[in-house]
Image (cartoon, rainbow, N blue to C red; front, side, top):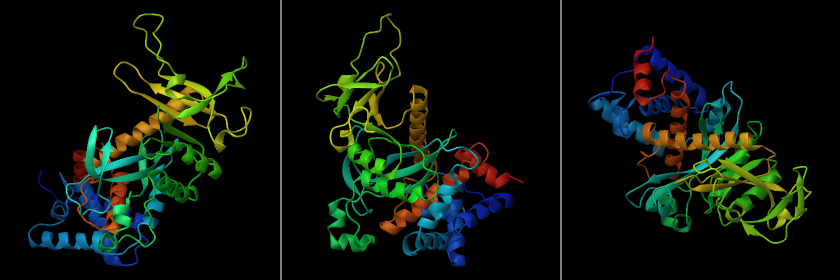
Length: 390
């Protein structure tokens, strides 16, 4: 589908939102190109390349000039992306109560070796090793969806320890090869000062060292529901008749051993979707004893025919419906990541700089935040509403 000009009402909607999110940009031309890039992510059909986005703004030689200007704005201009993300965080919930903060890892496949942060990693969903960028993302989840509010980029030593690569990609001095969990903590710290604290739901993509992450979150006063591997060691706590944590069972077992698969008493009867049990953790988090605050709850989710079972650790006193609601928020986050890739340009950044990548991801998040509030919220209807709304 060929790009078409926006209607006056569509132009006004994009302009109002861009002025709100990018008001911190001091130069008029920067604010104008922020609006244009946002417009391109929303209105350009197909891949969100610079040329396609420029074609949604203009035609002929003017489109070439627009493409060069967009390139300069994203990759060359040194503007700070953090104030825009703070605005997006404040706008994320709107008038809805926040259900959770959620976190996951976005995998962005790449062909070459020049894109900042590109490396080879095993991707469980793909079942193979791929060359990619890996980006931990933090989201604000309501009963409607999960909205991206912050991003980080995983950099391995091949990037941080190579002076030429660092200089070429404009990686800031002192930036170390942090793990996904460490990057997540930095994003949590930035969000903590902006919004009331909510439970953090994090899958294995970012909870790569769940016990260390749990300890860091506990020190910050952030409640959590973290995915753990089936081989995670825990110390079972026997349930007393009252249903409260009781006598500590000696020794450790794995998470998967605590939830053996059972045959249903009635043939064909479904297995429970969610099962939980109190546990203590090895190390400092389990030091205060079975009656102390270190008692956690381990949940096993899924595991029906043809489905993998996943394990989640929490310090929340939620019952099964409450945990299922939090898990739904995590599932909504994966849906948002898929939509960001298919509809809003998450996978389409072709620049090589660290700052350019963060600029692009900020605009992608802004495009989603605006696009989700337009009628229909599918790419085609978003484009039509921007063109035809009166």
